[in-house]
Each structure stands twice: as C-alpha cells, then as structure tokens.
Length: 352
Image 1: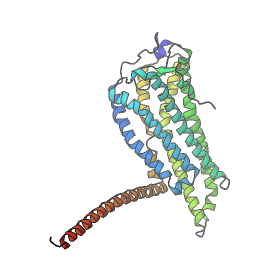
Image 2 (image 1 turned 60 degrees about the vertical axis):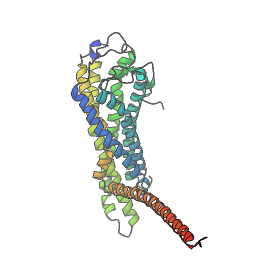
Image 3 (image 1 turned 30 degrees about the vertical axis):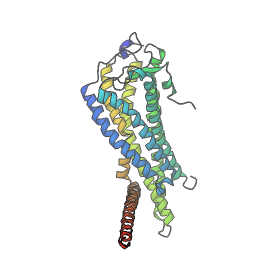
Image 4 (image 1 turned 135 degrees about the horizontal axis):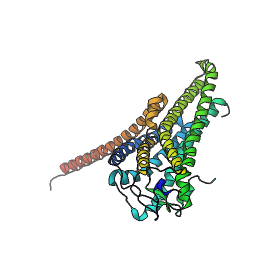
C-alpha cells in the first residue's frame, strides 16, 4: 500500500492531521448540540405517537417505532464525538480509547445499517399491502469489535479518531480501500435501490387501483379508515426515504471517492478528506434527528395522533396534580375540623 495515500509510517497510531479546523470544531459544537436537542426530543415524541392505538395497529408503525429507537442509539453514540471534537477539541478518555473505538464504531455502523434496512422493510411492508391488500447470520460490522483489528488512530480528530490498530497490517488496506465500498453498498446504495424500486411499484399499483378506492361508499366507514391509514403510512414512508436520500448519499459518495483514490494508489490529501467527511457527517446526523418533524409536517394522521398523545399526557399530569391538591385540602379540612371539635369540648367543660 502506498504510504502517501494515508500517510502511514512506522508505529501503530501516527498522527496524520495536527488538529481539527476551527470551523469544524464550531460545526460539531453547535451543529451537533442543535441536532441532539431536537433529535432526542423528536425521537421520544415519535415513539409515544407510534404507540397510539390507531397507529400501532399497523406493522409499518411498529417499524417506524423501531426506527426511532435506532436513530436515538445513533445520536447517543455520537455524543462522544460532540464532547471530543466540539467541546474539548482533543482526545478524551485515552486510557480506554481502544475499547471505546471498537464499541463506538461498531454501534455507529450497526445503527446506520439498521436504520437503512428498517426503511427497506417499511417499503416492502407497504409494497406487500399495496400489491396484496388481502394477504398481507453473522453481523456485517463484527470485525469492528476485534481488539486485534480496530483501535485508536488519531484520537480527537473528526472522522478518523478510530481506525486500524496496526496501520501496516493487511486489515489497514482492507479498512481504507475496501471496507468503505462494502459499507456504502449495504448502508446506502442497496437500500436506496430497493426503496426506489418499491416506491415506483407502489405508485404504479396505486394508480391502477385509484378508481376502485374512490368508489368506496360512505356506508363502508371501515374501508374508508383503512384507505386513509394506508395513504398516511405511504406519506410517512416517502418522507422518510427522501430524508434518507438527502442526508446519506453525499457522505457515501465522498467515502467511495476517497476509497477509490486509495485503492488506485493516488496521493490523497488527508486533511481535505477529514474536512469534507466531517462536514457531511453533520448532515448524516440529521437523518437520525428530524424524522419526527418531517412526519408532523407531511402527515395529518401523525399530527392528530401526536396531539392526542399530548392531551393524554396533559390530562394524566393534571389528574396527578389535582389528586395531590385534593389530598392537601382534605388534610387541611380534617385538621380544621379536629381543632374546632377540641375547642368546643373545652368550651363545654364546666369550670372546676
């Protein structure tokens, strides 16, 4: 492997980039803080909404619930990047950094894989319900858990804090020149292709059956409700797929270009790769934070269910507060009554 491609030399963890650019530090500090604030809030709201009676009756809603959990896990793992790059602008927890690298990189890759394929399953689920309305192994990222393969690379540097434990090994060549292709294909390109094919077929099937849906009479409210629920699930699916395309394709393309340059032995500017990948990683994080808000904007059913969920929580909170107030008032009244009785007894006692 040409050492100029990734600037590796002797030693297990050479520092290839002296520090993060200031704009990247600020982007991680304020950009990720904004994403965390709205992402965790939105994902929790999505979980509560998809657990509502109307939505949880469908398998698609269950998949969206799992998607919100997966997105929250990705954001949770990203807190370390926020602290290391955005807040400290330098490596932290160096004593256990190798173990942290393995667990963080595995969880990031695994949750990205899960989120992408959950959307594929959502598409398949909607496709099956559209096409058939009346009939409705070893982990890919396991090598990242190996202490012999993955560890610290450049602690504190965005996107390359972790990497091959030995940069002179054959695994380093695999990690830099082959693994990006594998990851992008399974996390982005294959899911995107399946989603597109499924969406196109769903659209064609809906167009063919549109006239039949429109002929449903007003005396069949159950069919009308099912048709509305199906339509709203499709809207949620399409909006989620669009978010996925917009946020994952740019960083995937950049990773493929970088891996291709490494594989052909082209001299690579590692600082430019870090800068570009760092910026696009912030965009990638948005994919795991904004589904709730897009669902609220695009689906009336989702909005209605969320408002209903909010009202239930408000009523429960009100009942709890009301009960506490009633208990306090009841205690006060009992004390007053007891005091009055005692006063009357003392008043009625004859003088001795």
